[in-house]
Length: 571
Image (tube, rainbow, N blue to C red; front, side, top):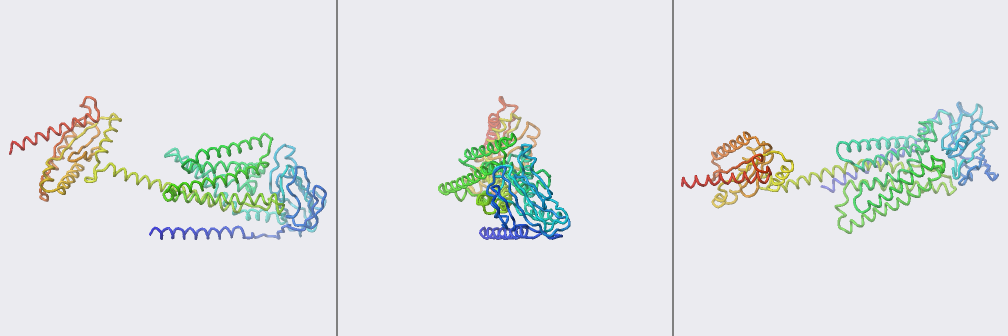
C-alpha cells in the first residue's frame, strides 16, 4: 500500500514537472506580436577597434571586443533598415558611454557624466528615438569603456517602432518578471511568517533564511535583466541591487544550511557564512567610498560561489557516508530533508552552470557575456523556493507526528495499564509540582478492601475486574479533582486543588453512595469496599506534598483498622 501511494505521488509530481516545463517552453519561445516590422541588426557590421584595426561586414557577435580596457573606444557602423513610424533603436551597454549618430548627426549620448561624478557607470538599456526618414542611412555607434573589463560584447541592436520595442522587451522578459516577482513575494511572506512565529510561538531560523534567499534571488533576477531600471528609471540603483543581492546570496544560502542541519558541520558553516558576510560588506564599503566599484568583484564572488558549492557538495556527501556507515541512513533522511536537498542541489547546480556559461562567454571571445542569460538559474530558483515551502510544511508535519508519538509514549509511561488511570510515577510527579508551586491542596488516600480474598477465592481475573470497576467509580466521583490515580496494588489517590472541606466531604459522600449503588447490582460474586483518609496541606506542619500524603494515608489505615475491628466483632 505504501509503495503504491509513493508511486502515485511520484507520478503526480512527474506530470506537474512536465506541465511546468511545457509552460516554461511556451513562455520563452513565443514571439510577441508587433504593429510594425522589427529588425534585429545581427550581421553586416563594420567596426573600428581601438588599435585602428578595421573589421568589415561581420556579425555583431564576431566584433573583436575581447575584455576591454578603460578608455578604449569602439566605433560600429551599419545601414539602417526601412524606417517605420515612431522609429527607434534598442541597445544595452555595460559600464560604458555611448554616442549614436545617424549619418553625421548626433541623436543620442549617455554615460559620459558618470566618470565626471566619480561614480560607477551602470549597465542600462537605451531606447533611442531615430529621426524621420532614417531608412537607408548609416548608423554609427561610438562606445568607449569607462572601466577595465566593462564588457566583452554587445547585446543585439534592434530597430523598430518605439512602442513595439518597449512592449517586446517586456514580453520577452515576462517569464523573468513573473518568476522574480513570485520569488520576492514568497520571500517577504516567509519572513513575515518567521516574525509572527517568533513573537507568538517559536523562532524558525530556517524560514527566515529561506525567505531571504527567495527575496534576494527575485531581486537579483529583476536587476540582472534591468527590469528594476525600467520600473524605477534609476540604472545606478538597478546595478547596486544586482550586485548587492549577488554578493549576499552566498551568506543567506550557508545560513539556511546551518539552520537546517544537525551535526558537526555547524562550526564550518559559521566560518563560511562569516567570510561571505564580511566579503560582501567590505566590497560594498569600498564601492561607496569610491575605492573599488562592485562590478570589479563579480569574478571574485563567482569564484567564491563555485568553490563553496563544491565544498557544500563535499559536506553533503560526507554526511551521507557517515549516516550509511553508522547504520542510520534510513532513519536520518526524512521526507522534509529529501525535499530541500533536491531543491538545494537543483539551485546550486543551476547557479554553477550559469556561472560557467557566463565566464566561458565572457572570456572565450565567442559571443561575450551579453548573450548569456539566467534561464537555467531561473528554473533552479523556482524549484528551490518550491522545495523550501514544501520542506517547511513537511518539517512541521513531522514535528507534530513526533510530538504526538512522544505524547503517546509519555501517556504510556504515566498510565496504569489495568485501570487506564494515572500511575504512581505520574502521581508522584504531580506531588512534586505541587511542592514547587506552593499552592494549597487536598489529598485523599484510598485502599480497596478484601482484594486478596477476591484473588484467592475467585481468581486474579476477578481481582482485576474488582480493581477496574473501583477505578471507574473513583473517576466518576472525583471529576473535580486535579488527578485520580493508582499508586500500586490496591492503593489509589485523589489530589484536589485547594482545601475546600465541603467539597472534600461531598466527594467522599458521593463515593460512599456510588459504592452502595454498585453493590446492589448482582452481576459479580464480590462486594465493593474501600477505606479512605484525607488531609489538607494547610493542616500539616510543613505543608509539603509528602507530609500531606502521609497524613491522608495514615488516616486511611486508621479507617481500615476500624472496619476490620467491626467485622471481627460481628463475627
